[in-house]
Image (cartoon, helix red, strand yellow):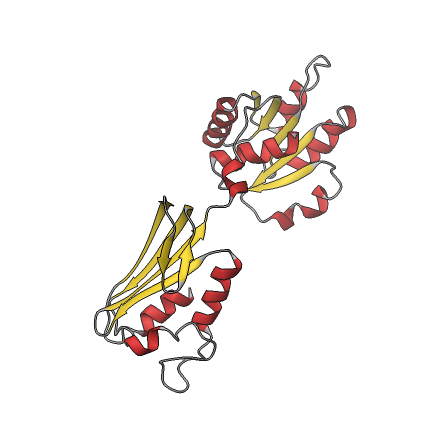
Length: 244
């Protein structure tokens, strides 16, 4: 945000701001501006403007606290030093190319975290009872879970879910249920179902804010909240997290 605000301020007569992202693999270390970026995988962000640019004698100072090229009252000189601090705390690197009258290009290299690369969706195991009154959402969620290896039982409302659970031989590992539905709501049917199946995990799904659920959810063990709209990975990672 700081970089975009600065780019805007550098174009008093208008211009263009372009933000680019790129997945970048450095086969060899990159030496630049007295810094060396180690070889590895990076998420690269560029913020490019067509503004007034920065004079060469100012370039080496722009990340220093309280240094500003703006007029008195227009800037504190803390914006770019804040950007620099955030980038450094994240293990990243920031560089700038600029030419007076031609604009500026800021490049930020964020290292791809090893943990992030290892968080993969494992093949799912378990039986999911999916309760959702909106047919398209139910179809999307069901397909997403089945693609990951889960067995999915579907119900379009709470009453149908409870009817399904009347079979004592049926084993269910997790309930994935909408909160607000015609008839009985999500927390109400789940509380009733957990009386006979106390070890089943729960994922509540809703397009409403979580605070509409919090009081009821607080009384329901092993439950988490997933806001709509959600992606395939959002759903499968949430279910996976509950079951492992």
